[in-house]
Length: 130
Image (cartoon, rainbow, N blue to C red; front, side, top):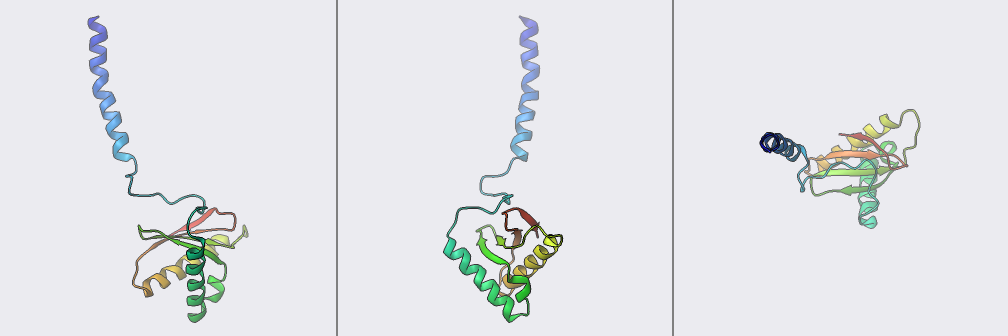
């Protein structure tokens, strides 16, 4: 009986430390991680309108070839933008995605915003986060 009580009392601090470590490393509810796939939810009209605005910006700033693959943009309240593109699985897909991310950040800067960006390919897979 005494041995069981002693073992239980020794296990309690270990359990407490484990729970605290888990709580400290878990993500806060108001923060949201960058999804691995482009989200299937959201206002499609707004996302397409934002994409068109970026393509128009690209045409005006000699970036039309970079922005032509942009299909949808989801601007989140945390200052992160998710960009869905028509970029396929070709060898230079990541390079293209990096150029799209740079173009979007320049576009956002011209609008007075500082953002981070994740660019997704045609399959919805994340290519780059900047």
